[in-house]
Image 1 (tube, helix red, strand yellow):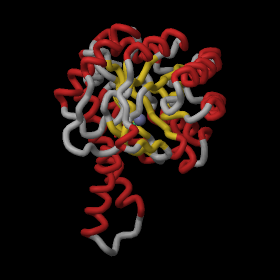
Image 2 (cartoon, protein in one colour):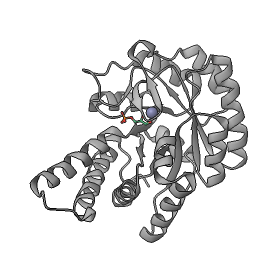
Image 3 (cartoon, helix red, strand yellow):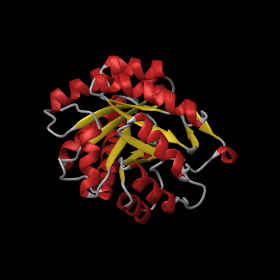
Length: 286
Ligand code: G3H
Ligand code: ZN
């Protein structure tokens, strides 16, 4: 069933695992992710960025694809469809009215007071509709679609500010930027685990780790032990898909039927997602 992230993440936090948010770029991603979740008996979050929604034809199309596939597959595991890095109240409202079950409002570039008031407004609307909300503080580095943060602008979230934001807004989960990066890492990630622990104690809500691509398993496990209940992965699936498609097209220069390269690309995404679900501990938890 299509559900919000609230219960899913609370259960994950209580039981010591994390639910993956896998970003959807088109039909094949939705197929691969939903198939992986059902096979692994894992709860799952389909992340849709504003850029990806534009590419697919809008929020309603993303919801329609998700719902139709779930019906066709007879999906039994809990699935949330979540707006990734929502840029404004209006975009969050649009996603909620299109049938999203969860939204992120990313006010991380704003001064604290403005981030809090914006997040609060989104929570008020979302909770009327039973939709969960994720907020962010600090600046996650790298680039994902429209969200670009230069190295010099990267910033670790400040625990006392995180406490204020979570308490004043009643968000359902919270993403403190603690050194993770969108896209590939330059060298090893340097995650602020001391702050993560402090933020877990101060806020009490399930924490979210963005930039899941390229984080070593030991760091994933440590983050989960410190209250991280949602991990976002996008780039890794894209790279895996591209590798497969590139190989097939290189090997067979005469091939043109998209099903013959996008199909294997989809299988590669599915395998990658299954690997992540096992690593995050969410397999057999649905
Ligand atoms: O919001 C999406 C994630 O943070 C994705 O990060 O592309 O580095 O895996 P990633
Ligand atoms: Zn992100």
